[in-house]
Length: 419
Ligand code: F0G
Image 1 (spheres, rainbow, N blue to C red):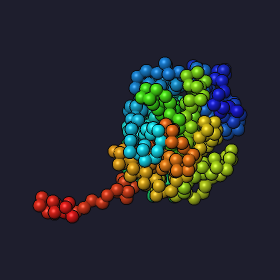
Image 2: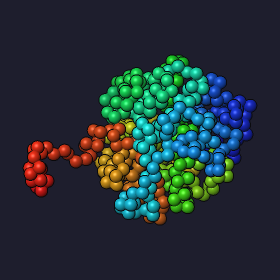
Image 3: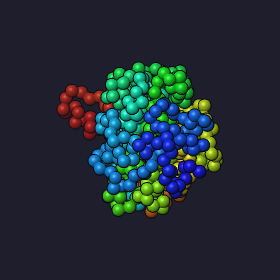
């Protein structure tokens, strides 16, 4: 199968452009990467993946941020704000509460627009320029729209975003609005928005920058490269497991691709590949269902609901890339309640790490898997937190302390806090 962890690096087809090409993960058909626009395979409609004649080794990397990893990307530089180089936090209290040997939190909320999407957009918008497209577009639960609007603005391109009406956190809409995206609120959920934007893209009206776009996942691969490099520098080993929230399963797919390419180049021993562990909210858990039932495909959930609106998704389009990754790395997937997500959000905040609800799903999932004994006490774990606290101020108010009105007088304030 083409998505085997230990498959050899593929030979470059005649369609390769500078050692880069697109390949269908289902039928293997290859395409030139930049001569025309396509998001899926012309023959079987399978997902496409970017392939390289020379997969990278760690020695190839220099500099900072996403573009440190240019040797693993289709270009030397992109439309940049810049992005990447996010912190890998120590969280000692959570580490001992969860009961694992080592717990680190990779806070992707520290990217320029406050989410990991920036890593994908710096590459995706660069490709859009290469292809000479006019208007950029995405469907979004919020963060993709904020990132696309900012990177589109940076690149001097018009952007159109389709959002599920009433289900996008305030911070994210504010970003899309100020960065000058045209915002369309659809009377439907995220999956409906994606159906529409895919149709607009198929008709040539817009360039699609959802994670169906294989170039976006190239940028997001750099999360894995940063985690491996930084964890090894600090601890002289690689993490046993990476736990992450799952919506469309783009990040899960991107991390798996990162590991496969490093194994292909000989830079990473297959035995050192971290177990990919996906977490969904109970009200939106089609990928967890597929993992638990051992299914190859996903059953689309028509009705989804969760406090973690970023991952309120019933049809994870990258499942055909992500499921082989979860299985090949010995990982798993787990669903968590909204209550557990909010508890985890408070616990992270208690370590000074402010995240939006979807991000806290990773910690909630780790707690649950540790309780179930699926995660062992001797494991070294990295949890990915994908978006910043300020993305969803309403959820933060809901989870946090209430402001207390006090008189305009020091004595009265002292009396109040003594109560
Ligand atoms: N966490 C956050 C904060 C997100 O915004 C998303 C996805 C995910 C996790 C899930 O990542 O799709 O790679 O599995 N947000 C998309 C959006 C859908 O439109 O902003 P995934």
